[in-house]
Amino acid sequence: MRTLVETKLLIGERGRYHLTQPVHAVQVPATVQAVLAARIDRLAPVDKRLLQVAAVVGKDVPLVLLQPIAELPEEALRRGLDHLQAAELLQETGLYPDIEYSFKHALTHEVAYGGLLSDHRRELHGRIVATIEALHPDRIGAETERLAYHALRGELREKAVGYLRQAGTKAAERSALQDARLWFEQGLNVLKVLPESRSNLEQGFELRRQISGELTLLNETRQALQRLQEAEALACRLKDDRRRGLVCALMTATHIQLGELDDGLVTCERALTIAGPLGDLSLRVVATTYRVQLHYMSGDYDRAVELAIDNLAPFPPDAVSQLGMSAQRAIPREHFERNLIILSLAQLGRFAEGAQYEADAIQLAERTQNAFCIGIAHRAAGILHLVKSDWLKASLLLERASSEFHRRNIALFLPTVIPPYAWALAQLDRRNEALNQLREGEQLLQLQAEKGGVGDSPWGYHALGRAALLLGQPSDARRLADLAVKSSQRHPGFGAHAQHLLGDIATHLQHGDSEHVEGHYRQALALAEPRGMRPLIAHCHLGLGKLHGRRGHRKQAQDDLTTAMAMYREMGMTYWLEQAEGDLRQLG
Image 1 (cartoon, rainbow, N blue to C red):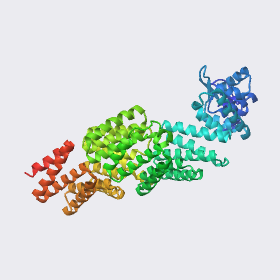
Image 2: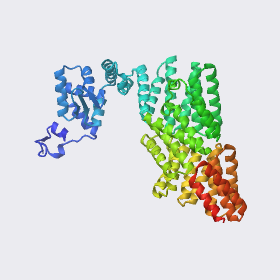
Image 3: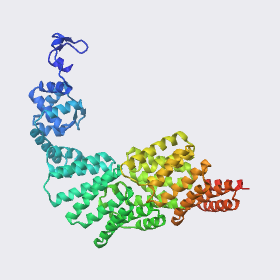
Image 4: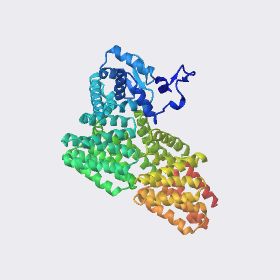
């Protein structure tokens, strides 16, 4: 309509236009872009150039940036902006003193930008970089994204790499993981066309290290490992042992997430070996943190607690932060270790100790206002209460963790919190909510498996199996228990839970070979007892007591139920103590 009015094919006022020519004489361009291009071409030359220069600044155009590069006297600039507003191409969106204009439509911006020759665009982008640097010498950080954008398009490559990396770091700090990944990847692409130098190799190392952290948090673990392997090769070329040790530590975490515990042990030992001669305390502490995680994942819970507590001993407060680790920036080491301590103490049935670390972890996490820290603290605390059988407390803590991870789209941790949350909801008989979480949890674990990740998936499948059994879906529970067994081949602690679940499912169905049912409980005990997994040991005795009671083996049933009751009483597991007491009463 604006085109027809501007070309005098329509005259009059809005609501009362009429044609000046027969309708068959009106030619309509094939695309909206063509309409816009024709409208821009009909502008006065000075107005057209001003619109194109504004398009180089961006969709949003601060007057303070436009004025120096428009090369127009102030009065002519104001007049031109008035004309562009009257044509409804631009609109004023910021008031004095921060006057800003915006393109009314993204397509208008696109067409105006495309109308400039590439050499002219490149030159204008370069001038914008110089203008921003001159206008904001003391607050470059606040303009990092804009500088990165213009340096990249102005082909100021060395500047672009620095600004792109800064922009990626800022995005990562606010948990905008995909944005961070994009900025870092663009930085790597620019480095490819720069001549090789030590400085550029160092930049390439740092960018790959940072990208790996964002990929890990996005649950794209195999790609993260590839970037870390590239970074290790660069560290070797640089002959930089400190960087090589750091990337070995990070590779350990990635191998753990992929379920490659043996490979993780190799890279962890390599990092520790490098840290020794360097006298690098921060590298030693971080590598030891991953060793703690290796012990936890392999079911050596006592050793995990011992190492983690020792690793929390005081050391210079900036020692680890100087590493600038992307994933560890998201989850500071001291928060991560408390998380592992709580989870290990839960498996050991040391709930009173776990509660002390829970209080510290949540308090420290809330103080950071960091979604990662808050999420993992509440997730660990939720599992502690879930294992103890405090279903309501567990559900509230896990709900908070789920909320934090969903809010920030932290894909890495969603499969670790949704399954236990489904279990807690099922225990509380919140059926519809539990079913929703059950479905979401299985989808998340399937997606994780498709990307090659393992992580805590054996525990996740076990938790979903528990939820399915409570919800009256024994066939689904059996399928999920089988997945738990299959994925726990290198995770004996998780494998013990999976075998116990299989025993409970068979007991619930009350059919099949009782010797086979007992076999599941015995296998669970064989895995749990050497690892001191007291809550699970008590559950196995409870299951055996029920099984012996149905067989009519009164003495064996009494012995197992009495053992379970003593353990539940000692650990303060009231819910299960009452269950065992009820079963013992039924024996008479």
